[in-house]
Amino acid sequence: MSDCVFCDIVAGTAPASIVYQDDVVIAFMDIRPVNPGHLVVIPREHSTSLAEMDEETGMYLFSVTMRLAQAVRDSGVKCEGINLFVADGEAAGQEIFHLHILVFPRFKNDSFRVNVDWSVQPSRDELDEIAARISRAYQSLA
Image (tube, rainbow, N blue to C red; front, side):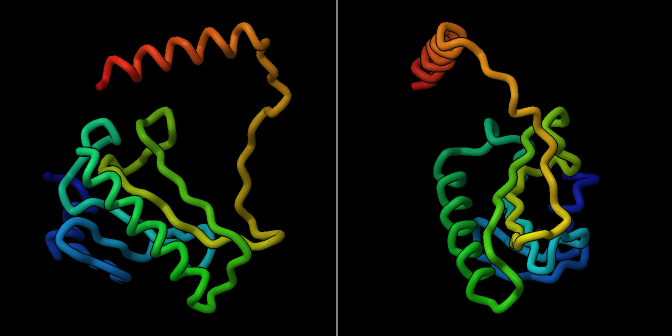
């Protein structure tokens, strides 16, 4: 896809510090890391969102991501925990519109923060109603 830096990395026309690659996925170091060891894992085939990617590729992408998270832990970089992050859509913070999973090591008192208002507590009726809507939508996908 034109104007996609991740497609350029896949094509070998943009530089990247490759950690892992095979016929389906490629993983490389993030150039703006949260912490040292921060990885980007992408499918080689361009997909903008989760909905565009076939399930087989998605399962494989996550499987490789799980192994890479363990590799980060085993690598000796400072790592007391791991965050996996997927931003699917602009409203979710997606900046590069080639689906990717970020893997970043965490440690106590690092600089990464998620600002969320955890005080919102919907009623059980509201939760049940939303759950039913999502469940119906899920059933219609089959």
